[in-house]
Amino acid sequence: MSSRPPARKSSLSALNKFIFASRWLQLPLYLGLIAAQAVYVFHFWVELVHLLEAAFGSQTALQALINSIGYKTDAPITKLNETVIMLVALGLIDVVMISNLMIMVIVGGYETFVSRLNLEDHPDQPEWLDHVNASVLKVKLGTAIIGISSIHLLKTFINAANYDEKVLMWQTLIHIAFLLSALAIAYADRLMSRHEKPDH
Image (cartoon, rainbow, N blue to C red):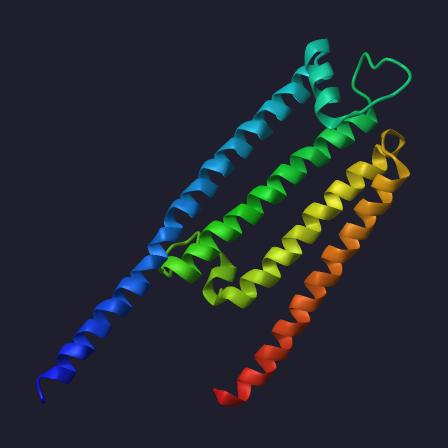
């Protein structure tokens, strides 16, 4: 009788280790996000090169930019104008913000759900990584999504003549929904942290 409990404890310990080790199944997902970010970097440089070439008078690059931003006008565009530059710049900012969002998910998610990165002594350690957890990550992701949505909405308003009124209305409503969702997440996180303080 005395020899059975340790055997059961050992089997439970092995099961616990197996379940805990299953977190490494998320590793391919984060590696996939890194690959997707590489695609974003490539897209950023393609757009930037087109912008620079168009600035020096390349009609092919200018047409590629106009097609990528979906800009239409009655008069043919033969050179860069302020609206095209602004839309391209907002597109580049959008790529950067999405890339920042992906870094938050990759680094923060890996640190929270897979394994410690042990960056305490690294001079480039992100400041927010010191106190990252699932709750903080949700708030930061919500804030980043609002920023990205704002850029998309601004691009739509600048190019409003090429959009239907329903598209403008729905994009505005979706942006407001993102904003309210982020505020709700931040408020819930604040309430939870307030309730957890007396326990510590």
